Length: 309
Image (cartoon, rainbow, N blue to C red):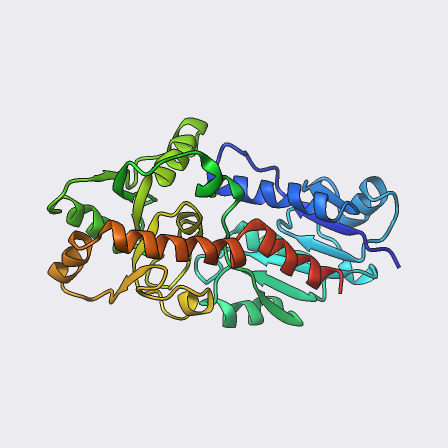
């Protein structure tokens, strides 16, 4: 039987540093498993058009819907395992067209790859898959500090979008202003997703020693957690709970965690007590964790084992 993988994806703008990770994943997938077809989705074609015109009429062993924005199709008429991928905004009322498009099809889903644990119950009800495959965010190779040629130049980098879910990010912004040593860059809510901003973020992350960040009260380990680890910019964060445990993040081993409801002066004390000795130990441990478990290579291994099984 064929081992062809059909990967349905939106044509992402690769200037966006977050989406470059997905682009990088597709490139590495083709290197690792050349018998892969990457199909850019379009509402003008259904799954049968794609198989006929892009797969040469060969029915894939597995179909992976990173994006499902194609003409509604009956996947049950195809002898392929069908998988889908979900990321942000999977919970009602936040579910967006990224997910609604997948539900426009008739399919018996073999599995759902999902970034975050917190939406698992909803995913089981929404998609009725055979199984859920926890597929956390990851860091692409461009954040690898050891191969970057960069040097650490300042302590703290605060960045990311402002959102009610990420309630501690603006608190970090306030705390940084009260540091004993003002060695920080605060870009919270400033950057867009153009090439200049994203290249600047990459450089600043690689040049920072510490990453105060918040994945929000839902406990989501957003990409920054893994990118910071690879960049040797140690995470300082409210404890996100189960997601951090599952992904190997341990307080005072490879990151600094605190209770989200801790008094402000306690968190300020944490920020003021960072040291080169502590950074060296935590940064090296975080780097090894991401390299081993949260790199593109690590995610690719899980992906191929599932789709080719």
